[in-house]
Amino acid sequence: AYNFCAGPATLPEAVLQQAREEMLDWRGTGMSVMEMSHRSDEFVQIAETAERDLRELAGISDDYAVLFMQGGASSQFATIPLNLLGEGGSADYVNTGIWSKKAIAEAKRYGNINVVASAEDSGFSSIPDVSAWQTSADASYLHYTPNETIGGLEFDFIPDSGSVPLVADMSSTMLSRPMDFSKFGLIYAGAQKNIGPSGLVVVIIRKDLLGKARRETPTMMNYQVIADNDSMYNTPATYSWYLAGLVFQWMKAQGGVEAMGAINARKAKKLYDFIDTNDFYANPIDPRFRSWMNVPFTLADDALNADFLKGADARGLLNLKGHRSVGGMRASIYNAMPEAGVDALVQYMAEFAKERG
Ligand code: PLP
Image (cartoon, rainbow, N blue to C red; front, top):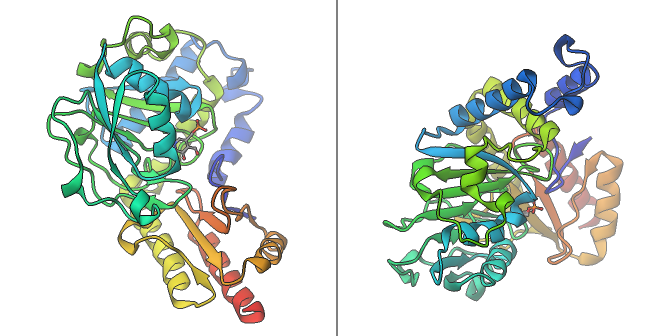
């Protein structure tokens, strides 16, 4: 079966196999990773290896702290302003869809939030022209969502924020291709797409941005505290951290982000090319800003949606139903989705359109 779920998403088969083999007895210790103390030599080795591999894969320098936190990406919507806004500070946000809106709504609880550009005018089908962004030079940071998982709208560039720290919710695009992380002050990614199981959130923060949390910031949300304690101020999500480490090793074996990027570009092109050349299917996004990871599409007749999904399920093409807020279909094709999965989907779509279109 091929699982096109947006998250929690499919994990590499080889990672699941390895986890299964090691589940009851990790490398002769007689313990599952789930049962190990997070302070044990064994787990510290697992944790450090995962961080090192992530740094190597993404090209993260020592100027940045890598944190393995909990509460998913959504908890970061509050954690970021609490840490970076300062007393009475303001921050700039770009609104490109549902996840940006959630980040904005949460940040507004903590300070003065300016929405400096919105994709609303285009029905969230295109990235607003950068020359019209109303950014301010004294903002504490500029936040944007490089890939809107639900809308399928993705930046094909990194915005230039000048001296203002750039903050990005990379939940659904992290590690999908090479990216210059030195342009960012902070990035965060919920793990359940390209990294591992849900609940875990990876935060990469430039070290000069640590130590700025407001006094009322809960200890567990204070980046400085988490960094000072190697993400073990409390008991971390050890098993998720371990699985993320296995995913990083798998990615390295595939050739790293360059190789992943080339495969992902090919997968996305195949699917969009098919949608564009077949009258029965449509994708509403400006071709320049189409997501490589999440491909929403509609059928010519909504009345056929249920049949389409039933037929897909029968072939082992799972979880193609679009997000409840937008309807239609959505195929999430993260790193772990093999190219053969996209081929199988395209073949099914072609047959369905021929029979029912
Ligand atoms: N941001 C983006 C871009 C997402 O796609 C998601 C989840 O799908 C989230 C944030 C929320 O993540 P979590 O459920 O881990 O809080």
